[in-house]
Every structure is written in C-alpha cells, then in structure tokens.
Length: 351
Image (cartoon, rainbow, N blue to C red; front, side, top):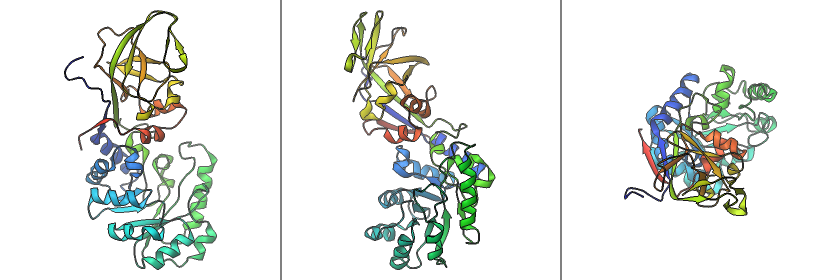
C-alpha cells in the first residue's frame, strides 16, 4: 500500500453537473424552476448545494422542516425564499420569524394558526389533488377563503409522475385545476417527474428535486455523485471456501477476493448485495461476493492484474449511477442518495 493510500471511502460531488442539471430542468420549465434541497440536499450537503443553485439562478427553495430552513438560510443569506413543505406549528414560530421562512400550509388548522400568529407574513398553500398525504381537501380550502394577500402560491404533488402513462396523472391534473382555478395565485404541481410529463403540468413554477442530483426519471441528467472506497486487503480463496456472513458465497474455483472499506453503515444498502451489486475498477466490473456488512464489502478481483490494497474502487459514478444501485436493492435512487453516510471523506468540485 502506497503512503498516499487511505482507509476512508471518498464521496465526490460535482457541483458543476448539479448546476447544469438544474439549468436544464429550469429551461424545460420555461425559466420558472425552484429547487428542492430537503434532507440536506438529498444527502449531498445543503450548505454547498444551496449556494451553488442560487448562483445558477434558483430564487425559491423547498425543504421539509423549519430546522432545515434555518440552516439553509445561514448558507444562502438574505434574499432567496425558503419554503417549508411540512407547514407550520406554533412551537416553531421563532424559526419562521428569525429566518424569514415561508410555510406551505397543509390544513385549515395550520392556516388559521399561521394567520393568527404571523399576520401579513408570506405563506403558501398545499392542496390534496389525490395523493392523500399532505394538503387541504376542497372543503378545507373553502373554509379559509378569502385568503390573505400574503398567501403567495398554491401547490400540490403528483403520486405517479415517474410513470407517464399512469391514469392518476391526468386525474390529479384535473383535480388540481378544479381546486385552484379562480384563486388568482401562482400554481405549482410538477416536481422532476411532472416537468417531464409536459407543459400542461408545469403551471407557473416547478419544484425539481431528484433530477438535480442526477436521479431518474430525468434520464438526461449529468452524474453528480462519485463514490469510491479503497481496497484494504486482498486474499486467495480456495475452491470450497466461503466468504462473509452466513457463508452466503462459496468459491467454485480459485478466487482472488478484495475487501473494501464501505458497508451498510455508509449507505451501501445490504439488499443491494443480494440483487447483483457490482463495483468498478478502471472501467472493469467487479462482482460483489458474500453479504454487505456494516463496514466492509468483498469483491471478486480474480481477473484484475495489478490491483491491490490502496486501489480506489468505484461504487457510484459514470459506470454505475444511483438508480443502478437502487435497482439492485429493490428501491429508488432517492433512498440511495439520502442514505449516504457521514464517514466519507467528502470532496466538492466545481461550483
């Protein structure tokens, strides 16, 4: 192992690619895109991602919780609008007041509490167009009309936007129109998938999220994340010997097995190991053998001449994106991104 070798996995975030993805989605939206940076910018670091997107042109940001909004305000400074998708609770009023946060009010009760606590302060509304998760039903919305002038927009969210042919997309579009026609407010229905459904879904502004970070269904996205982990040991395994917990993999012929320093504690989902997860070295595919454990993964490197301890192995990147890893684990790219652990040596390029 060379003196420069490390035992730490390395996560590289390409801020130029991230900005390019946002600009592409903004162009598809007719220049109206906001940016969703909840869950610490999908695990990639809102303190870096937020200012990058602001420089790219984003002026409205969405997060889930007031604490996230306060942290983002510290990174962005005054100016950009920061909206809280979870709405408002009176216990959080100081966060909203001190950091200039805008609640997206999801019920008549939330709305009344906000109007009483912060008269004249900016707010948005969310209506339920058929997802049955957050948002006001038509009767609730009617109960708070007429709206104060400070209510600046109304949103809803599509349940099946990543399935363009799903009939619920059209059903929700019609419901959203029925609930919001005549309100006289800017409207937003589309996140990344909705943007790609076409102009009818884009309304006055859009809310791209996962597509900014390189995830499906935005297939034209540039790769944003590269994850590499070092080999820390290589060993010969004889026919009949097993590797890893549960003796789940057994060699049928002589094999050369490398152990790399990453595991499910770092967001490499254990289920992915049973779904065909691979890694890559110099463009060459390395099959995973045995189970993903907390800190370690084992790979078959029998055909890789010159590989050894200290070599960096790519787990995410141009050879294998977040949605490829998600498919191996039977999940979605969102979960892969937001599960990336804190032990990585993080590096940001561009921006």
